[in-house]
Length: 447
Image 1 (cartoon, one colour):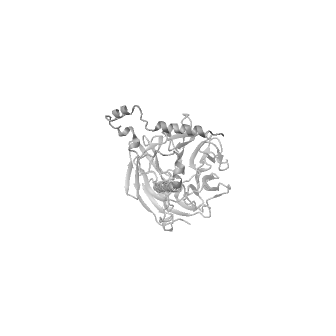
Image 2 (cartoon, helix red, strand yellow; image 1 turned 90 degrees about the horizontal axis):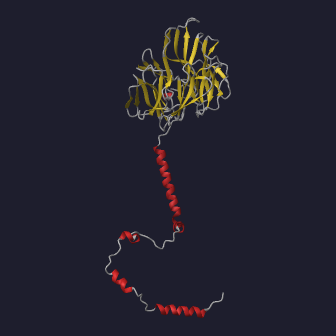
Image 3 (cartoon, helix red, strand yellow; image 1 turned 45 degrees about the vertical axis):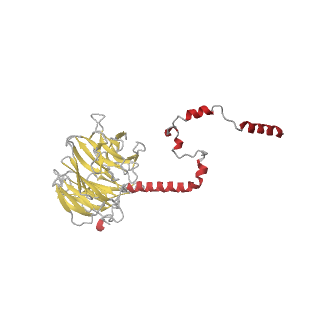
């Protein structure tokens, strides 16, 4: 590029000469005006009272680059502290299945639910004009459930859910006709029920109802048969198990909660009325126990390993014995069953009933636990039993005598107390904690 230095010097000299001693023609007018005007208010020029950097380039990253590692470290520490606070404030949940510690207990009496918190001694009553019964707790220990009827003898009942302290009572189903069985999912998100099909007035079929507890919605699953004895399959609860029949040989079935994947868990060879009765599942979901007739003369408890289909029966030395109502212990090693020993072959059905604690492998007939109940054909013994959540005791309600028995599983004598309820007590499950006693305190767990 060719430059013209003489031209540049000429322009520069002219500019300097023109600027010397130059005063704007309007300067006098400006001074006269500003001499009588007040200063602008502060709000009209915020940079006068806010700390501002008018030389800021707008590039944050270069200016802050030396401080980034420190800021990132501070942000990480804040996030970790928040996470620790959230986790620390959240109550730990018990395992969905297996032994647990006892928390709040619930009993139904005179149509109300009575709650007792042994940790605080607090007594709470869930009361109202309706008739409430069958209290129980979700496996995660977070919710209380019970049935609510308008009148004690009503066939219609709604499933109610509340907090474990009895607050926030709400229905999770509409009133349903004749609920025959029900079970919580392990995570406390769903309740599965068997109830009569009300779509047809003459129908006697029971259908499968799944309630979403959080949403309060219900779904009726079409399984193609009447059903009973609804349970969730442990340990993950991905399937619902039930006894199915209606014009078909009976069997035990499983289905996903969305209504897909229907499959049999047993051979489909049981009599419609007497085969595969009272199915129960071990806490780990490995074993299935059920009751069926042996040559139509005696009831037998069967145990089946679901993975292999290997099956066996629980033995008894009593020639005229019926075994029924199996229930797995929380650790899955024993079954609690009812044994009815008859005085003579049919048509005589008089005899004695009592509870038996037997090993699940069928290695022996077990040992009796609790009192005997003489019975006659016209007056069958009315008692029911369940394990405590830690597996150390068996709770048995004798409805005829209005007594609740607490029976240690190690065979030591039990205790009894007055019990003005037809239902067994419900017990909240709590997780094991450091320093807590082991399951079955005092070595009470059967070996």
